Length: 300
Image (cartoon, rainbow, N blue to C red):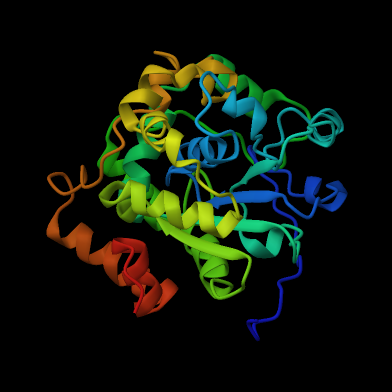
């Protein structure tokens, strides 16, 4: 057993997306799985992987409905919590909160996915730039929003990156505090760190590691089917099953939400000074070991 103490909730986070108070009323089951990321780091991919492991390669699962984003404030917790409580399958829930803003269970399993912050921003820009009026209305006009509304992004993704870096995650939330808190608990027995780049490089090996962590034996007769259903091409073709509301919040639909699934698009667009500024900030915020892991997936 790890000698790291289990984390406790110390604060609430509210903005146009978050209502962290829902965790205060959530009733854990001992076999719950919590999929955590900063965002745009492979969350939907991990939800698909866990669903495939739990349901043995099944087709046509409504993964977005089966695996809700618990701390998203839309719909409100009075509606969301009864729906989650009524689920009879092994639950796998999504969060984008740092550890200290959610209630932590010693028995649930937590999978945290990391991704280089520059790749996160490029993915976020696609997500934000293609959002339609219904997305803004839901986030800005639904009662209960705390803080300023979210506005349309600038035309330039490089400007978007600069605003995000200088504004500590603006217009969303801080990458650094999110990663720091999960990195700090990485040695707990019920926490598994997964990295987007490692998942892309060896998806079969990483899926087997995830299966072992959540205690779900793999049915080898369905292994190829599981791999197929977790592939980018399959998820892109069947995006309405895994994207919230079938992609109704984005111009171009669910296929826009599951965009390219590649890293490094920033390399030809950021200057050497921009890259150096990001890397220096990452080391200052995270420390050298954690910054290396976030950039590459390598630990130690």
